[in-house]
Length: 199
Figure 1 (cartoon, rainbow, N blue to C red):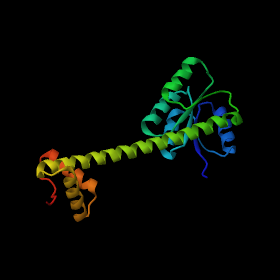
Figure 2 (cartoon, rainbow, N blue to C red):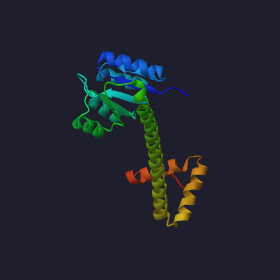
Figure 3 (tube, helix red, strand yellow):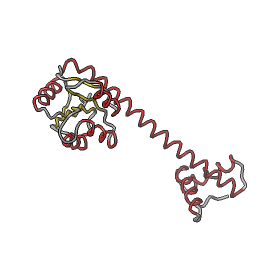
């Protein structure tokens, strides 16, 4: 199995080097960034499985990087910080973090948190893919239903006959039913000549 790729961002060079080395020894591929902008650049280039972000960095801090990840990727993230106060933890939770690690860190002790976050990230990605597939199926189903409705109104057919007409024409034209339906709906909505569906 390919090792998970972790993006690690911390402006403290000693913490960054120590943690990166420990995580590499634990079997992960580690991309290390000394700041938020570099972290975003690496995220674009490598699409990591999980980001571990220091909350407080000069320039773009961990929260800004997390917001960028939420808007542009499906990469889950953990925060790490030397501060464990309630306000900082609440900000991390609001940003959508899958966990919060308090420095100083011992690599062996944080491995379970990293593995849990990786598993949760995989589950979230699977849910997003399933949602996208369902949305596409519903959209296609809606277009077919609308096309059937157009044929019912235009030709005075019952629902089953209109569906069979549409399906038969898709076969005749060697086209997908959904593509023919979408074209029929689009052209009816635009007031242009509708695609030929033979009686």
